[in-house]
Length: 75
Image 1 (spheres, rainbow, N blue to C red):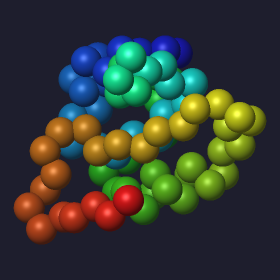
Image 2 (cartoon, rainbow, N blue to C red):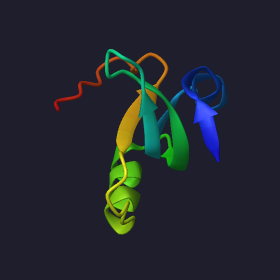
Image 3 (spheres, rainbow, N blue to C red):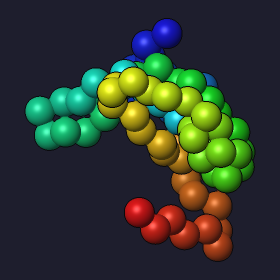
Image 4 (cartoon, one colour):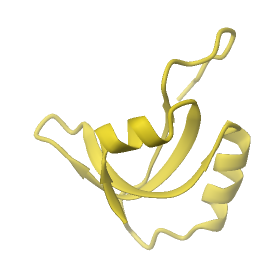
């Protein structure tokens, strides 16, 4: 089910989310999508992402909330 980013931020605060069918605004910022998987562990989200074949849809992985101290993300 499609959800707007403000709703996702409230519902999944403190978790990593894997999203598909993302919609973007005119600045290419993701404004919503369908959350396929969420977890406090980034590794679990990435493992489950590999299992999902999005079939050409727009996908997105993001931490919702403030990153915990000592965590760095390299893209």
